[in-house]
Length: 460
Image (cartoon, rainbow, N blue to C red):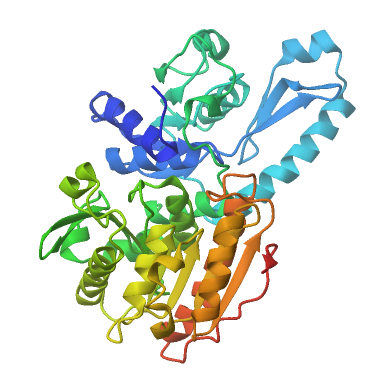
């Protein structure tokens, strides 16, 4: 059974692990980058601390895919002396590879930890998590590193792996857990509907949301009050509207940079992997995010209202009012995709709407044509370079906007921005736009002019 994305994989794996590890003192260790979003869901479900386990495989100089050892932080070093002897590697060979990998290890640690120490493993259960097993070399090295750091028990958990995967791991872990072991296995990404590359920003966002013990985010979050609907560890909440209830996903970092409300397109939901990717990066940049289902469960089943832009905009305005009631005077931005972008622009056109910035990803602003001249919030239109029909629709819509606006075309990208690096460019553009237009408002000053520094995407 394929996984929707890493979040879905993490939740399903957490459901399996919850009863097995409930009585143990667990530290969840995600393997950057792809294993960290999976690990974050497990840590949340187990109410366990989340950390990264940064490991660098030491590859044989003339055959890099073959490991002769691995290194981890705190100068932990594991060497396979059998491989070293068999291949007659000398000290100079070993030192050259180790120096190079140690440099990369330290770079990643600085990037992910921000100077914070690792969570101690002595006497605890180290739950090592990745998004899947291919060769097993990195996972095996990670388990050995956890053991070297004093873990009393090591459990390796992954969503998917080849049938013979346990033989590849040997006795590196005390327990091996895998949900799916398909007969036909070519690559991990084969078993995910969405297997977009995980960015460093997303890794940091996962750690920030987890509130690592000893971190500023963790201690501050423990002291800070939260709105009643978001009190539970599970960020899934329900927003009441006059004609039903809407499911939503709320993350509230404490930096106070503003909150971005997401409006998904037709056929999608608050679980949209692309919107969650952008949201995680915004969380890492200090923004709160609310991913919202704009239709009730009954409406979703009947497909009623999917293209009813007025209804979707009304729901978005209701969510905006809830944000103002529960989260105070945080500056608000909208991030809309496809038909959700039309709803966002329609909601923003209301003179009583407090939204201060709008970002449209592959949007259909033409569906809100009558509203466009009334939008006052600075608006960024992001379109894929190969999405020619939508480019034309956005150019026509841009001509109708009277607010500060800009159109960015991401070269080579199609409508869903599935190409390598495309969604990262969307994320950078959106983060810059919200930083320019919400941060000044959060500090009491005027909103920025809507002209953040240009990034890699080309201007339309």
